[in-house]
Amino acid sequence: MQSSPPGPAREQWSSRIGFVLAAAGSAIGLGNIWRFPYVTGQNGGGAFLILYLACVVLLGAPVMVAELAIGRHGRRNPVGSFEAIRPGSFWKIIGYAGVLTGVGILSYYAVMAGYTLGYIFKSLAQDATPFADFAANPLVGLPLFAVFLVLTVLVVYGGIRNGIERWSMILMPLLLALLLVLIARSVTLEGAERGLAFYLKPDFGKVTGHTIVAALGQAFFSLSLGMGAMITYGSYLSKRDNILVSGVSVALADTLIAFLAGLLIFPALFASHLDPTAGPSLVFEVLPRIFGTLPAGRFIGAAFFLLLSIAALTSTISLLEVATAYLVDEHKLSRHRSVWVVALVALLVGIPSALSFGSVPFFSKLPWIGWDFLSLMDWIFGNLMLTLGALGISVFFAWVWKTRNAALEIREGCPGFDRIAWVLDLMLKVVCPIGIVVILVFLFLNLG
Ligand code: TRP
Image (tube, rainbow, N blue to C red; front, side):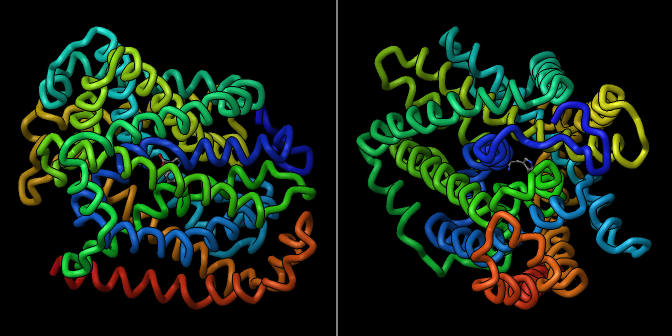
């Protein structure tokens, strides 16, 4: 994925496993370990988990395959791929929305990633400042945010084949191992059972329209779907790759990590009598408490936040890559210039988010809605836009491009696909569009 000229000579992943790791790297990130626990906490626990899993299987996995197929066939960024499949049509508007959404998500995601970076040093220094005070200092939040964006730029800049592909191979299993160790500690804390019950025993009485919308949004967010990140990554796939197997593997890995993150957070949260509905600050308050109970906890804490920062980095790369690929393919900008332009926009758009944890009262509690700016950005881009994007992608795939044409693409590298093509067709033609529209109607009725 270094400087990739548009057209048939487009650069490809170095290997199948390289792609799966890069795509899993995109999917696995703060969405699993920061966002999933806090959204689950706000939406009542167990029932949310079940809805989330249902959304991943019924809507997420099919959209994943659709995005990869559109990308490999179009061999372009999202805008270019829609244009390649249906030239001159308005469908590329989904691509434009995706490019915009990517920058929107990057702008606040890098803020949280910056705090994660800061927590590496905070843990090492055994600094006990609560998250609220730590994050309320703009002289901490803004530089960390900028540093994280620059790190992202440097990786996307230099190409990810040799850097991130190789790094992910070592570091992601390490993150998994550390998660398992920490879970063992968390579930043996006194009072952990109540956390397990909250997380694993569904109480469907708590389900509202909002819960369902949140579950769907979380599924798309966590899988990096709905804005063309997987279209872009798919555009670097070769015809020998198996889209179906790769896509499903990525979805499985992502879901496993999110599930484990819940298993880590909720027992510890209930053991220390914290509030599950605390929102975006949740994991930053809960995790240090677990580290505090461990021998050499400061080093374990630092290692954990280091791995989490790297997981976040492999996600911000994909967010930056979409708009970059768009500028390179469609506007013939150089890769280097594109990367800086996009990062600069994300930096400017992200400043209010970086000031929304108390440093500026206005952004910390917006008039009218009462939310902080970062949560608002997350709701608009990380939830609503992704859901609309996924709706557009499924309709485009099944009704416009049509599954039988797409099957010619997917069949390459996956000869057995024809036998199950009808399942994908049913999902993308009927289940996804109807499911998403019903959920959105719920949402707006609720808001009204
Ligand atoms: N999926 C990533 C996470 O869970 C975030 C992310 C990266 C993303 N690229 C994306 C979300 C594209 C939506 C779309 O942390």
